[in-house]
Length: 258
Ligand code: ZZB
Image 1 (tube, rainbow, N blue to C red):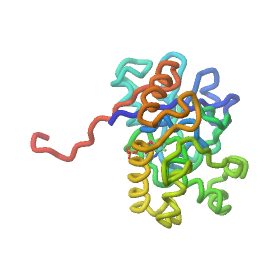
Image 2 (image 1 turned 60 degrees about the vertical axis):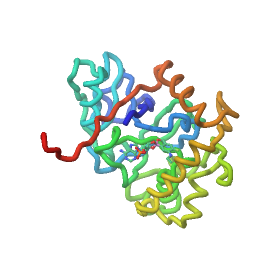
Image 3 (image 1 turned 45 degrees about the vertical axis):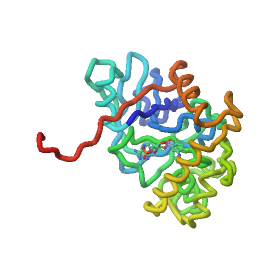
Image 4 (image 1 turned 30 degrees about the vertical axis):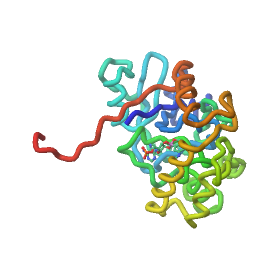
């Protein structure tokens, strides 16, 4: 699987726990398959119990992500020491909640790291960027945070990290409108981020519709089909150093040869 890693920059001054990183450029490294949706980011997602590290990518840049992903990146020539991840700081997802971020292309200038309970630490980087207009999981997780004050309290989340963030329409899909994920979640009567099977189905539908029939309604490639815009936006992000390529080695079940 080939992902694009979006570099979500941690805004300085860093909070107490991250002071050792001051002076470096620090990014939450979010793995995405939908770089064309970056205009609609409203937050980043982390797993509260997940183990993350701050790893040196080169002399000046540091990525926060899962250890396994840092190792993969080291093998893909993204580590200060060749082939070897070097960790400056170990943190949990809970430590990341509330971090202020600036993310490429996002219409929201500042967004926050928030908890999502369905994040898989053995996929991508363990950091996900949230686009509730076009990703059903993101739509439901943000909906949960907005509608349940007790949920916010449990994770020490301030209202202003969540409540001001509205869904940003970025792609028009025939019959589904410009908030595709919301439309599909309402149609399927999905109640929360915990309805994993329904959400998997919603994601499948949204991917298909968005990719094959969607048209960009914002940004440099507004008016173009998603299929055309996607590689153009991806190239732009890569060329400007706002993103890098990340290949995830095939996950294999045990084979006879071992
Ligand atoms: C932004 C985005 C916008 C995404 C969208 C999707 C959609 P797949 O097909 O299963 O590989 N993701 C990445 N890493 C993780 C993780 N560790 N745990 C949970 N979710 C993760 O899915 C890849 C997508 O799943 C990625 O692309 C990321 O969310 C999320 F409008 O990034 B995406 C219809 C989906 N729309």
